[in-house]
Image (cartoon, rainbow over all chains, first blue to last red; front, side):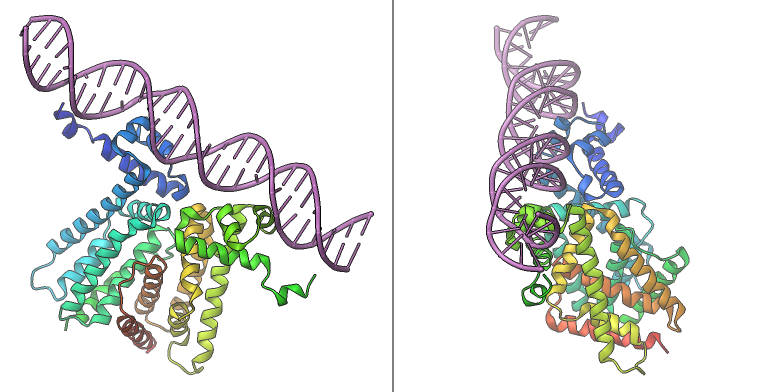
Length: 187
Length: 187
DNA sequence: TACTACAAACCGTCCAGCCGGTATACCTCC
DNA sequence: GGAGGTATACCGGCTGGACGGTTTGTAGTA
């Protein structure tokens, strides 16, 4: 049947979301095939049909993170006029630190994936390297732009791990200031 | 016996270092009592004599991280004259990002500990909250100072996970610029 | 003798992955 | 058109191995 896949969320997607929920609620150690299957509402056999090994599930989780971030950044870029100073960098700030509610769980899931298999971080490593190269190639002040990226990472990281201590107001201040520094870096 | 503890590295210390090595070489998933014991050159029974449970080992790892960071920061502070603008903030930059070779492994170990038991992050959460409060209470530009701290965290995080892509030269540029921003924040 | 600091065998649990099934849809040759 | 074949999507019990923790033993000290 073909219709079902659009009508209902596919089982594959449900599993991925379940995995994120499990890890964001119970930490990386609770990420077992059984618990993910239970939360997703499928049997373990069903889960293993879609992801033949735990590793492949973790890989999909990491992939999902990268794709989602890219999507968020592109979306943020769309809201910025083409003539904006440091448009790409600002899009990173707004995209990564934007209000996507799923974002935190996905960050936690990424860390969990990394905890189980370090090689999964290679995808992230590559993306960071690309970003940095992009900055280096641009007319921006390298160090300033890099610091903005690092701070974005740092904040996202803290929030994924739920160890950030900022109030909403403070967070807003920080984001505003990041945008300001991003602006400066491109002049 | 008291003398031995100064003459030879205590077994307890050896275990902790072994745990860091294991996790930094094989990732969080490889951090098992057996593998740590093997690397430390003790039996599992011996390990469990010093750390009655895995949880206590992870706790010691997290504690060690906090203490070591504090030590690094204090040491860096000592190299800065008392009249330095933004001395505390600069000490954080230099202390956390300083060249301590053990530092990377300890960061990885902390993440591994967190992967196994989320509650261990409470120590870190507290330290972050303290730092941020300190900044808020000081005469510094809050957002700027916070961004410096976030960038420091971000870089340390990337390096612990080995996903940083900076060349030595670029890293130096970033640190120098961080120091400059820290200086600015205190004026 | 009592205590410290281990060693080594052992045990129970948990978990990833396997496997034999099942139901439904689609194909296809008579 | 219906019988047989095949593919998709999923179920759930099972197993073997890994891992945390216990217990028992023991060599060296005080």
